[in-house]
Amino acid sequence: MAKFKFDHIHLMSPDPAKTAEFYQKMFGATMLDPIEMGNGKVMLSVDLGGVTMLISKTTDEKQYGLAHFGIKTPHLQKAVDELKADGVKFTLEVTKISPTLTISFVQAPDNLRMELSEGGR
Image 1 (cartoon, one colour):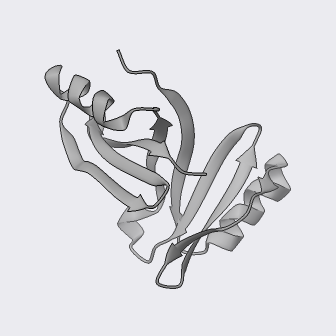
Image 2 (cartoon, one colour; image 1 turned 90 degrees about the vertical axis):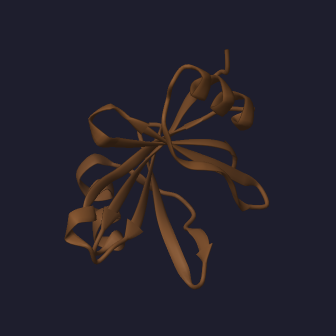
């Protein structure tokens, strides 16, 4: 069976800097290096007690708040194959989004999106 570990929570915000500041000021989160997403887009990142929170900009009110949570696996394609064999549905097949990061999205219960990833930071 594939091995997994918790990786991050991804939040969507109309003002990522203000959201990051809230977690810093109110809960002692530490700002991490921003993540360049290409096309001039930057995702902010804070560490809150060992949990990474990624914060992206959105203008769609329906997307405010939790976008998904992410878990890592060292062998993404193997994990996806095993999960599919057990009947898990995917909303995004294995996709390389940068030279070091490959992701896939699971449709978890209660309409929750879950990102599976290999590589990255």
